[in-house]
Length: 316
Length: 319
Image 1 (cartoon, chains in turn yellow, green):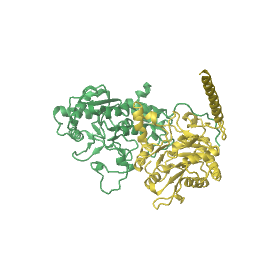
Image 2 (cartoon, chains in turn red, brown):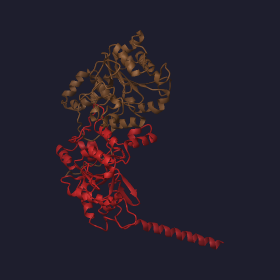
Image 3 (tube, one colour):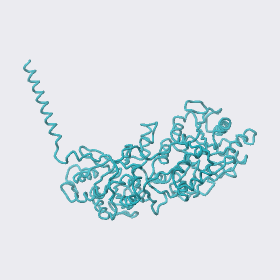
Image 4 (cartoon, one colour):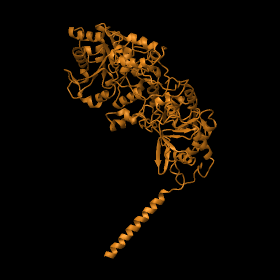
């Protein structure tokens, strides 16, 4: 019995060592070295005090540099949201272009004539990059998202668009960190340039994947970007509150009423939030009033930049 | 290219939301007549005066808010009023038929829709007896009304509380000079409050109807209290008897929408319905109460130059 016991013990020890060796080997993965990961994982805007140190010339240069090209992916199925985005937040982009799967008589769009969502996204990105003009920041969204473009500009205000930025609400799927499509995707000019380059590589970034299970477009985008050395960063404010939301304001608030009943608004929701999702077209119209008009008399925030209201709009 | 000389920001948020407790303690400012303060603010190009104005207006235009509620609504409604706009008033009282820890004021009434005017009469009598000197203006609101006291003070600062004045969302029928919607909230000047109480004392005003807002409007007319036009400089309404979506969305039907039937002034549907410096909305459920608080006091577009800019007068001397 003693000899059986010692064999058992030897077996256990050998097995344990074997497991340890295997797991140690497992951490040394081939591919992207780990020191580049998590370099800028959480992206916050600069504080007001720091911005006030910038000179007048710097501020005018920044106003130019921070202009945004909105890539809005639509289909005729979501015509009411398309119309709502067209009539509300998209007017605050410096350039907003609607990219559609097929043309719709009622509204203007670039007709991509493509049903596959990933292929559509690729085409739209290539088109936008080619037609960027002087614009250096890109915002990709569906019209079911509501965006406050001024706050997007604030987030990227002193970030250099000639560096690769890929920002939004970050989720993780296995090893892949990706920006959620639903709450909007921000890309700098350099990120777009690298993307357009890697689109040419059918091995790393195939247009139509032959795999049995197709990854969602957001994950395919993240994979292609990762191959180009561009990593997802989570947009949040100085207190760590999310700037990109895949819920509506009402949804965030009612969750907060259950979780933080004594401090409902301050905990859940950022003053400088950029996106909300899942709102009806009517709710978007009310948002325009709530965001761009309703306020208490007498506040002056001394913001370092000024953004003028857009032409041809009466709801802001 | 902008050199990256600024360190990453990890400090506390530099966007101060309005804190209701801020009051200027500088005696020269506190005792300055409001008109002189206005003039200083117009002449001065720095924002120090704007911030002082913000704080000083609260001490010079004292607002007492009383909320019409009941024991069954303390948890479900009054609590959320207190967590949001209630604290922006100089004083807030919750009027009920019972005493409670909430805290409430116990009035000598019973509960029920037909008791609303009795509650209103008793509430104003209570305030007249105990709080007349605590405030300059007296607002009545429901427990499902959302109020922006800062915008109300702005309106009131242009008026004299010793004049008999009555403000709110003006309705046309039944009363010649109109009457103010109960749900949208209405405000009485000190003189108006005196006359309301006197009217019920000497029998000039009676409980002739259950309909609180219309009945009070009759008393105001009897006691020669003037109804005020509370629309802003662009003729946009500030008090609202319904939630924002009711007014903001352009109706496609040609027929007159029901919620605008009683309007005293020109009916406007769409963005022109509502002032940027709105004072109230009604039929606001708790979630919407916090949403409105978020929109009013927190969420804002960075650097945006508002189309309607009365605050510009505070900073640059231009309107």
